[in-house]
Amino acid sequence: MSRSGAGSGVMRLGKFIATAGAASRRRAVELVKAGKVRVDGRVVTDPAVVVPPRATVTLDGAPVRRQPPRYYLLHKPLGVISTATDPQGRRTVIDLVPRDARVYPVGRLDADSSGLMLLTNDGELANRLMHPRHGVPKTYRAVVEGAVSDRALERLSRGVRLRDGKTQPAVVRRLGRAAGGTRLEIVIKEGRNRQVRRMCEAVGHPVTKLTRVKFGPLVLGRLRKGQCRPLTSAEQKRLQESGFDSVMPGGTARRK
Image: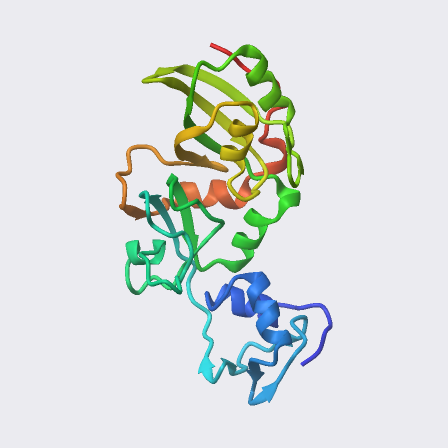
């Protein structure tokens, strides 16, 4: 094994583990560095080491075998936790996909939010989708309290100051009135904790309902809450080929 450039049929160890669906790319690197991985019986702690095609790789003693990539689009219901496991024993998104899928969620949605989630065993793609530099656009439909003014829309679109810094420009659209509030469409390209909720609260309009309807090129459509489906080949191709940094519009508020 070496750290030289990988040729045909070989792969770096961190990528190998992620591609096998054993962990995300970031987690795979952590596991290797922690000494949890062996290659042909020898502990390897460098995730950049190249794995030969016929090498035996184990993680905590269990064989790691390259799996065909799998991709599922899920409509996460309220109350479901968007992690692979939950120490409190609550229902997670993994409970809503086929038992043999061996996939994990890409990013998170709060327990009190619903909508589109992607689950996959493609660690390389998951890492790219979650990395901040790619700016994957995420579209939400929100119901907020009160009548939202043009000034509030402008503040949301230009960025609002939160405890962890000012948000990047967003695309905000007023969709109409709701009972006691306003329906908004908000497109962001960041992934801060509870970001949309905190943005709306910062301009005086707390969120009462939040649904993610689009993630990159993927659209929730008519998929019912709690249901999942495999991505079509066309969706997989769009996901792999999307130039995410160019998808996000300039950030001016659009109003109805």
